[in-house]
Length: 276
Figure 1 (cartoon, helix red, strand yellow):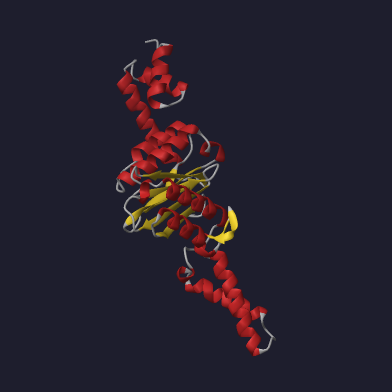
Figure 2: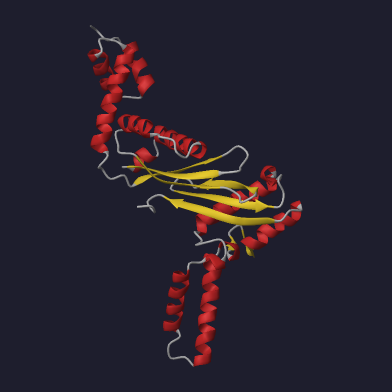
């Protein structure tokens, strides 16, 4: 039987498959729309299986935050080319996955992924995801840098249960997220810096101080470590929007203005490719 243009377009609209694939599927199903959808889905599974072994090192970082700001998530979704990473369908798919995982961490989205592989024509994989929530009262905020190659999620604790709706605190959290995206700190405070990193810095400082008097060596090592801690600890870093104050001073300033004690609890910084 002949397949008219309207039915082909309707199938394409329903499945996102290419025009030729839609026409073939309708031909195989003798014009039965539901059967054609089934044919395309089966083809999609086969296509996804073929592509699953191909490298997927490009992609984007998607984010989602609950309406009450009590939890948030970052998800890295990879594809094969940067061209597809910028594709509207891929972006929508990635953001949908983030929201789905935020609401249901055990959600099975393999069928949705398979359909997307068939639609876009590249291997797609969800590489990693991580959630964040305040320990008690507080909020989470995020920032996705232009191009979605870098994204940050931040948890801010408070002694007030209303802080999640305070525009000043939300703005502060957004600014700190942007700061983290730019400076890539290792951790929130110096006492969280991994001991192996501290030991490595000590070794470097000792090598640089070789040949100096013993009393000078200790001073040099101490000074080098102080400089290192100030560079990798978020709270000690100069705020990029106002280098005259540290992030800790910025947080204290906002807390004082709203009459609440604020604390930066944790942050996540995802960059495409870092998980591989």
